[in-house]
Image (cartoon, rainbow, N blue to C red; front, top):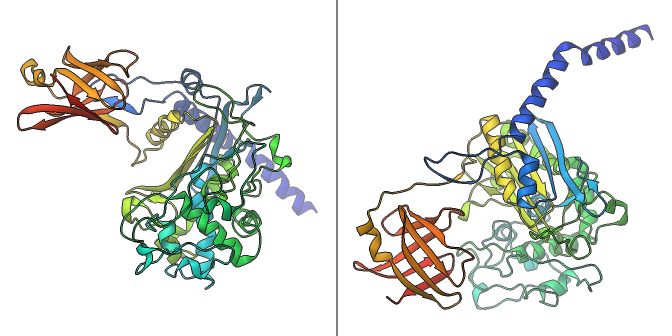
Length: 475
């Protein structure tokens, strides 16, 4: 007993030591630098870059709530909420507030597919119809030689339709997964529209097929499978794939908001497409996925998944996508966008750091600004601003772009000389837009960074293109 008492006293003394207090102070200072060091994602080289305070920036952008969690050195270094989870209830965001993760559901759901492959239940390269029993993917001319496989679903090369889902409102009739796949919900049917393996095209429909495959194989509802085999083992015990959201979680769930500030119908959408978009979680919970995968990746020791599986999962394929997460030179992870919610998960390959940011708004622009501030504080590569460089073009060089352009979908616009660039004003602009040159024929919007490319035939300007719109020059 004396020994136990002595150990207890020592632990208390250590916890209260000046060193511990100093560490807390240093961390508090670090968090403050991040909170006060937000920068716009779009930047023009040579211009002064403003710094924003996070809560002032949230107000400016009309974002009700933000939640952040950061892992450093294998543990959650800090997690914090900002703003409101529900403005009508004046309920604040805390680190325990639940958000919809959107498409970050996909790399979490992918864990179960990899587990089944490790256990020999499925082969990632076999026809997915081999494992489906309650519904079959229709074969067609595109599947005569190449087949839709779990691997191709995971990395979005299966040639499947339906990139995303809008969700359902409370009170709507919620279709079954098979009905969603047959086009009986609010999206088209999921089918093969090009040869599997030919090229990359994002498909939430593919992950919905995978969801059904998993539940067909295990004869158990998908949320239960994920809870017992993935979420609970990861420590994500307060997360769920259940849709509609169970009553027990609703008091801690954030309400989703449109970019206009309007509340989402029924406070949040419902996603029967759970593997693609239905995970409810918090940054502190979701980042445990990152902790587990990063540990296996960096130590090369088996964890929830085997080393070989994780290495394969994080191998970048077409369009920088692995078997679940997106994979770039320095990072891996995924973004998420559900109705009224936006999120991002970023894990560093060579640094023991991972970040999750979640917001309850369709406007997720602040997420990149937060990531830029965090990357700057932790000296992390791979998170860069969207930088534009201004080229010096004389009036003579800019004059061929001047004229009237007709956009079939948008109307008429006029381009004139303005300052050291051009100005476009038309039926689809609220106010004139200043364009600055980056190359001979490419200009950019000085407020948004959107590129405007002038189309040439020989030395003559014949049109202008931005986003998906093309305008023909008439004079």
